[in-house]
Image (cartoon, rainbow, N blue to C red; front, side, top):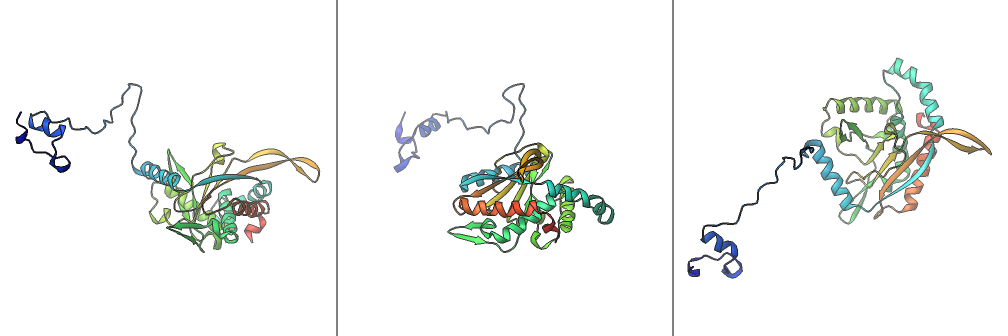
Length: 270
């Protein structure tokens, strides 16, 4: 083999193994794109595309970016559930909408964020941006996918208006008709997994937000009230926040405010 006839492609035009193989007519095998065919007869391959790919990328970015911590507070929802039951028939008859608990959760979160603006923020480089508008995202499961439509300016809407807005967004989600505007601009997100009988979990922050509230299933539990043991409807508020910019005390104060609002639900209708 005449090495003088081989054109080197390595550093300083050095001859590499690949150069020799190419000269002798035996180029290295081209790496093939990974086959989507299952490697086992009992396996099924599902391509990560569409909404699933967006979710995959967003969650990966969130976990890699934020120092996420979750803390939990119990909340007594007995009075809220009772209030919802009292207004249920009237709202359906006169307004054509069911007063879901999520409507109250969105309103309460928006009001609590006004008192604790650090939770309604985002990080931009070396700056912390406090947002004076309250666009609350609500995680909605559609089949095996997850979408997060946004209720804009939730602090200035009534619970009834929020309920109507949620009904429209949920229906659009089921019809796969949500627009980019419906799902953009959120400043804080709520993930209510109560219908799935999950009591405690660690929701992942939706970037570029700095916090997310998870709400667990409501269960009847014995609670001490005025020295007596009574059965109450209790759920867990699971708050995940970015510990780089939100300290534990700030997160705790937010949960205390939110707990007070939810345990005195008439204040949400005022």
